[in-house]
Image (tube, rainbow, N blue to C red; front, side, top):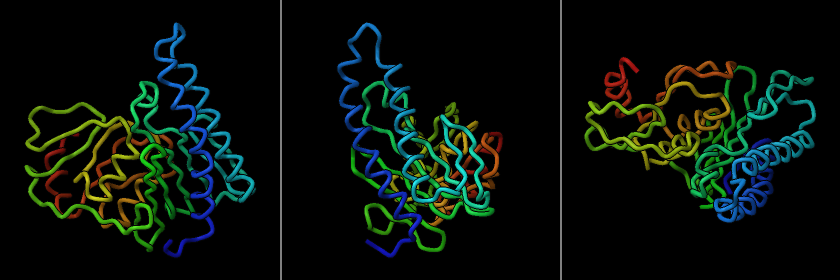
Length: 246
């Protein structure tokens, strides 16, 4: 493994541990699909259980760090300059329907920036991570954004409404964290969406940037994010022009 900080190592170990819970729970979804009650309540419980485990592990290692998470909300502790930002299951609708495309997302905001981010797809065993000024990686291999520069040849992801007038290819995967991770490794050329939460994209921001990509300006202290546009440098201005009214 490339040289990583103690904090990123904590994030990795935590996600590896909690993934066993998610993989087991995901295996139960197929049975619940045909039950009278259905899997929705089960998924909600899995979300809460996963988040609780992540918080416990991170708190054990860094008891003074503050926390922002999907289910637990804001927890201000002694150290307000360092905050974990957690999404236990990004892509819960996919999880709910037994679609193996979801991820655990954990980021560390230090002072005024996201300095570490990790997105882990437990089903495919793909771990994307990055630290400020250290590059982005997928399972220990360095990753970089796509070099494609013709929008017509690009594949752009979104979870919002798709305008049929766009002259580029679009896809909806249902998982913002993995969409951003895929931009970072060049599988996707860009990603845009409105009305997200900070835990959906915090890890992805640093992973995209450290892979050579760019995003629009995002207020990382605001839980509600108006919009995000993440791309490679090669198509950034072109895509933003197309999304002028987005």
